Image (tube, rainbow, N blue to C red; front, top):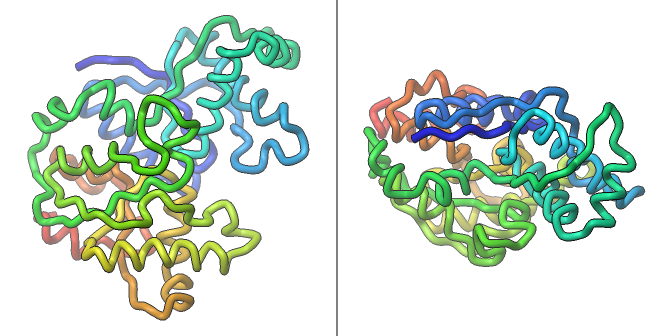
Length: 291
C-alpha cells in the first residue's frame, strides 16, 4: 500500500511524547505510508488558544493548513487528539464559511493563502478508514492474544463530531485492537475526560478524573490501557501515582499509545517504539508477548 501525507507532529510529539512520534513514524513506514513533516508548522493553540481571542482558535491551525497546501499536500495527519481537533475544526470552518476563509487569508502572512480544502485525519482513522482492518490483520506477525486491552478515547479524539466515530460510544480503537489480536475489555469510562488540560493548574483534579478511568479499566480486568493523545497519556501515566493515592486503590496499569501496540503486533523491534519512556513500566506485559 502507498499513500503520502503531510505530518503535523505538534508540540507534544517532539517533546514529552517522543515515544508516540517514534511509533507513528515506525508503523507508517512499515506499512508503506509516507509522512512528510510540514515545514515551519506552528502550535495549534492547544486547549487555551481561544480563551482571549476566538479567532486564534481558527487562524493558528489554519496557518498549518495553508502551509500544507503550499507544500503540495491535501491531507494532514495529526497524531495528538488536541491538535487533530483544532486542525480539523479549522478545516471544516474554512470549508463551510467563505467569510471565515476570508478572515483567515486576511491574517495570513509570508505569502500564504488558503485556497483549497485540506483534509485533517488522525492516524487512528487512517488505519481504520484509509487502510482498513482486513489489510491490518494481514500485517500482524505477532498477535496480541495474551493482552486484555482497555481502549481509552478521551473527549477530543471523536470531536468535532463527524463521520469517523461516535462521540459517546466510539468503537474505532476497539476494532483496531481486535484486528491486532488483543482481547478488548469494555468499561464505562472510555470516553470520559481525564482532566489532562488541568494537569498544571489543578493537578488534583487531573489525578481524580484519571483515577476514575484507571479504576474502571482495572475493574474490567484490563492489563493495559491504550490511547491516542499525549495529554491523556500524561494524565493516565505520569499522574497515576497521585491517582492511586486519591482513589485509595493500587493501580499499576501501563498506558501505551496504540501505535506502540501496532508496532509490537507487526513484529517491529520494541527499541524503536519508546517503551522505556513510560512512567508505569510495561515490561511484564511485553514479556508475556515474548519481548
